[in-house]
Image 1: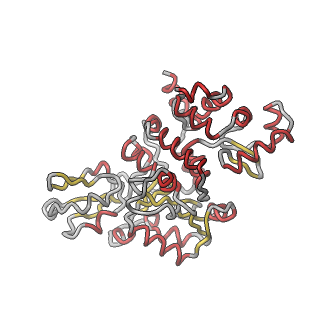
Image 2: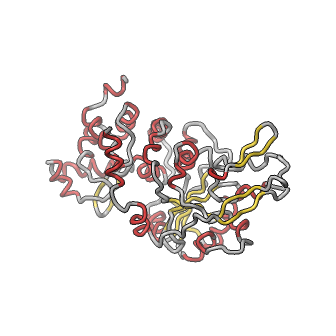
Length: 371
């Protein structure tokens, strides 16, 4: 409580802004204030209160709203943008949600400093409260899994959207981020990933890839390079999670692990399965073939396979259809079967937004928070 009491009133007011459901924020509290006070000095917080959420506003309009001269506030805004605690670009400046948003934007270029390490500690502490559970009360399938290609190619009916190769074929420009932000942040705290490394950054396609390279956040790769990277990530038993849009759309793929990834943490512990689209395939276990070796359990990133008292158990409700477990099953007791709940991805993010938010969702969340 001591740190909260020492926070400047402007930092407290900005924390209230970040706590809004519009920014997918946590409830107002000590941990949030502590994080905001680390990110923004009192003078910066006073100015940041006047920034719009998401959509950038030009310098002149921000100055008018803040009641200050443009030449006075521009250095402050530029300093915030360089630290990536706000968005800054040709269109102006804006606030980003703490996560997802600022977290990825700030860490994707791989910078490492004491300031970044303290940020990682504070953000992880806040996220571990599980506040994101409050946003997972209804199905919002914004994310889909791309399964291990080799385990689905022999199925009787495989849609192109299920194949990683389809995304590679559809794009001429692709890139790899310098780091995985989740693994990087936990690396700052002394945690080392059991499957991968911080350098295994997200895979980016189309206009997203151009922006990645232009912003110094990653490097462009060729199609053969991308295929090799994909094969290596699958070999590491990582889960491929991407926006729930068609392969031709610009997109990014996080290659996730259960020990570091905040999204998988949400899926596994904070009702985040509501954010994952129904996969085209699900695992099915033939118990008559299972020899209870337990080898599928440690490779499963969603704990659908468990092993206790020398006996295997499978919970299909936790399965996201990644297919990682098949390679570990020597008696071939696991098969992928079609999921009747599957729905093809949206054609682009605009269509996805209309599918996810037909109206009234944020109002309902605001009403629930007010109770």
